[in-house]
Length: 261
Image (tube, rainbow, N blue to C red; front, side, top):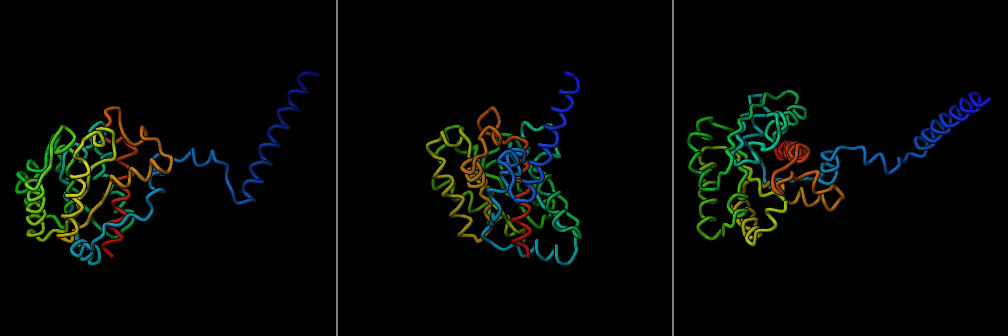
């Protein structure tokens, strides 16, 4: 008797679950749990579906249109290296390459990761000849600014001149240029100078008419939309998690694809 009752109860519960699922499908709405099942990266992307670089990428567009190989160099510091992720495939440059290849299936895309842990803006510029120009890239992504302020630095006019000179050097090599600003993370926000550094990057991008990919805004938008900070920022309060790098890489690829049309 008890066994029969348990079977009937289990069957009833199964039927109830199926009916509930059918009702959800018919109504066209999903429970809030469905959103929770999305990865942090997917929710981050949903909060940043219309990211714009604010500039055209003519050389990149020409390569994609002609079917010629597109060569991208990503230069920067530990965020470009992909600190704390265990596989190169999880770094933002490699995620960007895969997503751009998906969006432009007829394209051949090569990405060179020229990140170096601890680099500042002057360190980056000092490496341009060896780690950027030597590859003759069509597009350069320059991730900059974090190490210049996160450890107590105070950016001034001298640093702004350095960024200007760096961008002009990259453009002189006939590359399209996209600047990637700082991360929206506790270690950055604790700096009294982060807003000054952000202003420098934005001003130079506008002045030189190059692209600006604001991961600062991307991460802030995501957190405002309900993505937990801990899902995008690691234990050190600075570097991105694997989901953070994933969102950054895919959002950047989509913005590049749009700007290169």
